[in-house]
Image (cartoon, rainbow, N blue to C red):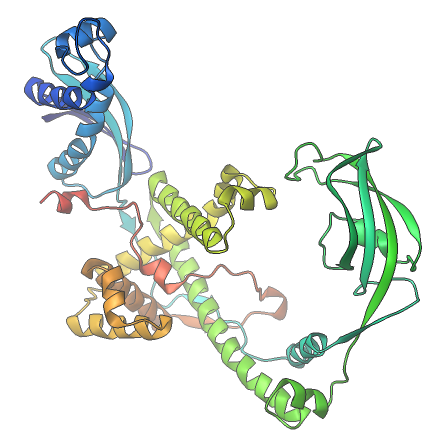
Length: 459
């Protein structure tokens, strides 16, 4: 086996052609033949007894090549990484093969290489740190949620308004024909819950008990049922009851009912204290994210698509696992969301790319600043993770290997270093946002699921 050509491409990829020697290829073809021969039918021979050359003469000289190349693929990949002294990431892409007259075969594939990272300014960068102020409106909203949780309902004779729960019979039809899933009786619907398609709940507002009404609506263009997506329909609705929420007063009695406090002032003080802790944690997190955004802006790295693909796939797998825990099939979840795998991947890609860039930046800073993960650091980190997730230290060690632990620790040291070395600035109120992308510690520190240092694994 030898590298015939190595051509560097854009985005930290390379097109590599490896020549597989005749004996290596022959041995691999024999391995495949022995595994598959019982599946091949040759007249005059019992299953598995026909010679390989005869089988190939009947079904084609290259019939065993695809499986043979699949067997050789990992070995070739490791060989390339070792010979070229490169750190590969993701999984290589097969480009094809070509048989030579001397019995060898040229095996071509595209490999993704861990990118070179050049840091720009990363010490002393200025980044926005949101205010930790807890506004009165936040406290009021919390009290309002307690009132809603403890509301009672009573039937009313007035027209239905937003927030009311109406009991209805409804029948949906398209072109005068009822459609599946478009009918129910004695259905309790809270107006404003957005349970039905847009327009349904707003058009029920104003109806009174005993009233019947035809509601003209159009299903969303991306509705999961293709026969209804974008179609005009009519719902015949009959209102049978209207219940209104009666909220308790915001007073000392409410405080006693919902907490261990005797007065509303005490409850508000407790809420303010809790919200102050949350505000500080969020300000710290947003400040760190804003610093990392600046550092990523200042760095250069030609990132191979495979690194981002691996992170997107990791997130998809997490979504699948989450749905399984709720007993929902992933395909059913996608239908409910009016989504496809491709659309979900597209949505995930920007944040996945940001996370990949952030990891690269943190690793480079850890390298440049010569941070180390000592045995003491590892023990401390394992204990912190165990406490955070309520598990024992042995479970943490079962999940992480030493390289993962060291990587996480170096990432944390890089983030701590950046926070301490950066300058916090205030943002005008309109610049503050609740939509900053989080960068969870575990995600940032964990190695890419598909990224492997194959050069090291070959040793």
